[in-house]
Length: 144
Ligand code: DQA
Image 1 (cartoon, rainbow, N blue to C red):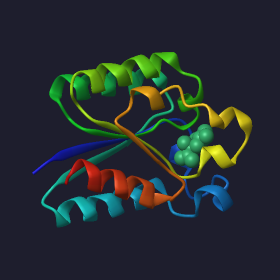
Image 2: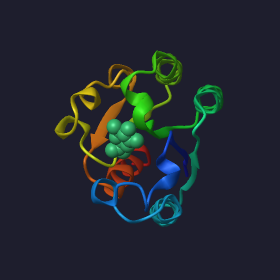
Image 3: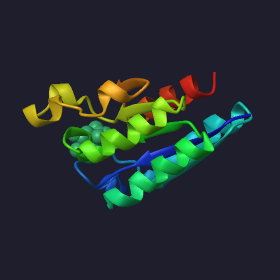
C-alpha cells in the first residue's frame, strides 16, 4: 500500500469556474474524490492539497522528501518561472522520491510563456493535456 501526495499550486482552487473551456467544469473537490476512488481500488491512499502561497508548497515538498512520500505536482504558473520550486523538487527527486509533473491543459499548445517548465528537468516524468486523467495516469504510475 502506498500513500501519495497530490500537490496543487496557485489558482487551482478555482477549478470549475476558472476558464472552464480550458480546465473543465469539475472542481478540486471532484478531483480529490476521483483520485481517492482510484487509489482505494488499489488499496492506496491519496491526500490532495492546494495552496496559493509558494512557501507553503516548498514546505510540503521538503516534508515529502524527508518522509519519502511520492508526489503528483501541478504547480500551476509557478511551473514556468520558480527556481525556488525547482530546487525544492530537485531535493525530493534527488532523495530518491518520485515527483510526477502534471497539467490539465497542454501548456505547449498555449501561450509562449507556458512552453517553458523550469521543473521538468528535475521531475521523474511529465503528463499534460488530459484534464483529470493527467493526475489519474500519474497516480497509476506511482502506485504500479
Ligand atoms: C496548468 C497550466 C499552467 O500554465 C497554468 O498556469 C495553470 C494550470 C494546467 O494544469 O494546465 O495554472 O498547470
